[in-house]
Each structure stands twice: as C-alpha cells, then as structure tokens.
Length: 146
Image (tube, rainbow, N blue to C red; front, side, top):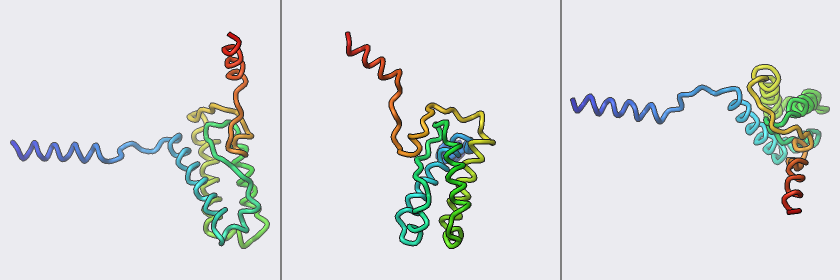
C-alpha cells in the first residue's frame, strides 16, 4: 500500500513539473518576437554582422500593435533584398530572415483571429515608445480641473 502511494505521489509530482500545454499562436508569436529582438541586438553588436546591420531598419516588435504586420513586411523586404550578397549568406542574417518570415506568417495567416491588437501606433514600433492616448489626457485634465 505504501509503495503504491509513493509511486502515485512521484507520478503526480513529475506531471506538475513538466510543461504539458502545447504552444498557442499567441505564445509562439510572443516568443518569436523576443527571439527576433535578441537576434537583432546580436546582429547590431557583433563585429561580423555590424556592417550588414546598417541597412536594417530599427524595429521594436510588439505583437499587440496593429502595425506589426506592415513593419514585419518592410523589414522582411530589406532582409531579402539586402544590397550585399555576403550579408545575405551570413548565418545570423539567414536565421533572422526565417524568424521574421515565421512571425509574419503567424500574425497574418495562422493566428489572424487569435491575436488582439491593443494599440495602433506605428511610431511605437519604430521608436520603442508609445505615444499617450488622447482619451487618457482628457481624463487627466478633467480630474485636475476639479
């Protein structure tokens, strides 16, 4: 009886420790966005790919922004049509191209209805800073008048 109880306890503890849920469209899009941002940082800082990064536009990936598909399409165009053929063949640039293509496919086709866009601020993707919402400003002004 005791051995069975110990085995059952070990089984349930191992089930709780493993990650049992498959990735969803949303989680995959978030993870790919983080991976692309990390890879872009490496490309911009690495001496091997620093020259290739001069052509790449600055992008701050936020899958909650409605402009993400347009910006991904733009950066994918730049990566695919890079002026230097040597840069096109570098492993990090090839990996960047693949990851951006995957994220673009996820955002525009596979998870089109699953993703919720909270903001529509194209400048935030370029600068990394979101402009304030006008409704929030008005509310703050109304509260200060009282």
